[in-house]
Image (cartoon, rainbow, N blue to C red; front, side, top):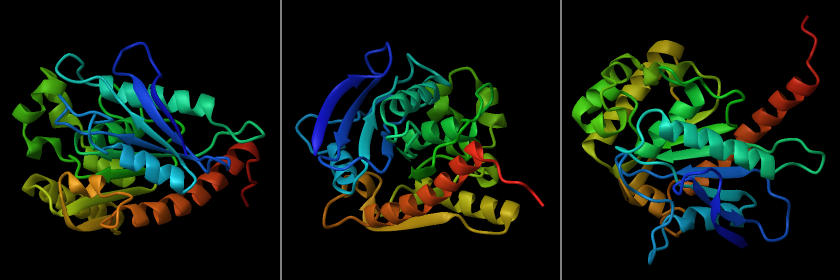
Length: 267
């Protein structure tokens, strides 16, 4: 494994990425992790701890580029600044990591807590912010917020500020349920009541809109933090599921990219 830390992907100090690269083989794709922190805090790497470098090392061991991104924080940077940062980081990765013939490699986006909001916003769009085109190969959302009004406008105010219409009008659950990208939701067994309630809302919305349940993981013995802190350890309930999910989604992504280059005739 090769590490490259504090690599800038944009002009702001927070716009930096830690890369964990497979040592010998060409990467299978990029696993990009967006940290949480209640919109106002958190970091891609915590000095003196293994977090969230554990995710980068785990990705590289399995043949992926682990890309842990920083992003601008509220209240200095408000909606849609963090989603814009995700877009900029993905564009940067797409420029750097290509197949030998120059084609893009799949980017699998993983967001945790408030980072799940930023990852989802980048993918499906929101008021005044267009959905990604092309979308990431997959989207994994851990302990996220999907029903913003239910979560409460006061807790969202640092990021959304006076834009209360974004909170009330942005039906993120429905956008996710209608989106074509593969989406996986995860929550810890001992996660916060909010996270548990949010996942129940997602399940209900998916059932009402599409008649099917989304991919989901219930991380045994994990809480709001340890679901991702355990990735790559003997106590990891989420990582093995993510690897299978990435493999399945990458096959779908390859078919989509083939169709972009060589459109199939329709009968």
